[in-house]
Image (spheres, rainbow, N blue to C red):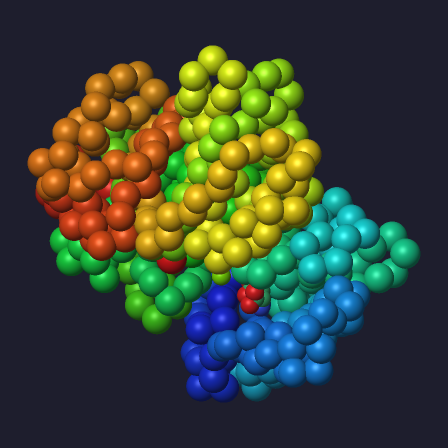
Length: 413
Ligand code: ASP
Ligand code: MG
């Protein structure tokens, strides 16, 4: 048998006791005949603790130093896990991202992996060693230490699976898979046995914290067989794979929601070519991440533009717009907070134009007003009042038949 990449998140290695349990699980994997290559995150909330310490020193720490600081978290876990394996009599070796040949672009705090030199891991595997690699870190051509962005260990795992031609990449986490909806809101939410890369990508981007979106992108690109499962139980988890292998006929896989959305309306912009380009270039230039955009004509000369953003970005957006009033020549800016976004995701939607209509009908039944809408081939999102979002998720889950269907998805933030 070949290589299996197993990734254990922060909770799974949160204490010394848990690290010992993880070591036992890796031994079982090895006994099944695989060569385990293991990726770990920093213990528990230790990355947050490090971030917090930096903040106590300065409000704007240098990004290079943040990478230097945060990469230490994963080094703690690889060393301890390797010791735990050694004390079980296993031949194991820890590797930092750079020792494992993980090369990244020269960007601090959110670098992308450019390539992976397979040799260090291959050599260790051939020597019969279990390899424990630090997640979320790499090195540039110039020898600078980088990180891949928060939650990036998933990406390390998938990229290593792709580079080493692993048979499987297993992501061990504190939930037992991908759910049809957040079980805290929908008690009847069910774990999906399977989900396609595309659906998972939508869900991850919609805030389903269970997988890092870039990890899903990478898995799709290199066709890495991926499983999300619990590090505490023995259940099978959720398999993320190509659409073709999946059950047919089901429209909706899951319902995602995001409870922190705001809407900004810029009214009375000149209705001429280039207005939108100017507006959104200014916002993008100031790192305001815009989601849904709606434009409506206001007479013949003017146009109103509304867009949704993360609730955290309201002040920043208003500031940016106020500073650009002369350039943009709008008449007024208003903001609406206390909104949420509810989305249905499903590969079956592409060929079924009635799905959006059904969603609107179900939301009307539940008396939930819709403020904004956006669609993609496999997703429909509606912005709704925050006080209605739980009701909306529950009603959609029931109405689309996910309470009883064999298949469904998601966790939201
Ligand atoms: N330790 C890093 C973080 O907390 C990376 C990860 O856990 O994936 O974001
Ligand atoms: Mg994670």
